[in-house]
Length: 255
Image (cartoon, rainbow, N blue to C red; front, side, top):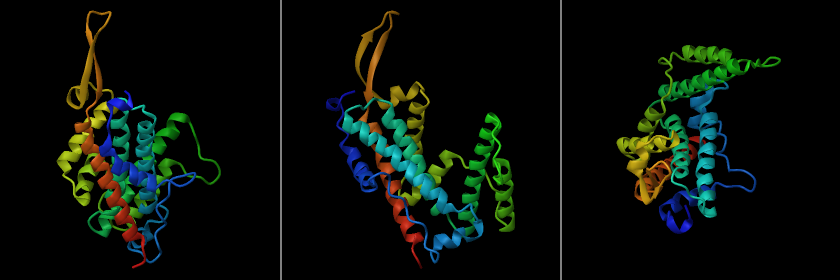
């Protein structure tokens, strides 16, 4: 798809926010929380499993996904699939950071952080098992880390840790950014459909431009991105990004 067929003006607020976070050789990180901040108080008893680590990583990953779409747009290489998959990744990242930092109550925020760390180490354990990798020296395996995480949760008498679901994270985070959970979820479902190569999003969120007759006596549709359908996803990403940055900076400063 060429730039002549793609306007994409609705992406500019998101792209401008991304460009502000670009350094000379890397994306500008969110700062480490001040020791006297409320975020540092949340993280104090979590040992090395602080929420701030997860939030900062999610933020940077989201910037990279959105910036990849910005670069594709500048290069005029916009296809009907990548804009959905890239903003899906950005939305999930920004929502995860917001879900961690803006949870209701300190115990719930700690439970969310430890639940996500537990899932992280579960995935690490799976990778170690699949590759036969064993940590060297005094390093601990993913399974051993999960035992540590569970012990921290028990020591703090937190509610049971649960495996975080991406959709539920999005639904929980949406109101924090002033968004409708239902609409955010609907946009994410379409983006996920494109990411997984499903059929239905092409009918629901793409525009046909031409019909070409193939050698198999079937007609093949040439599809382009439906900007009206993609626009809300860009808005949700921008809103989540701005709210995450705002909330993090407020909670990472000294009280």
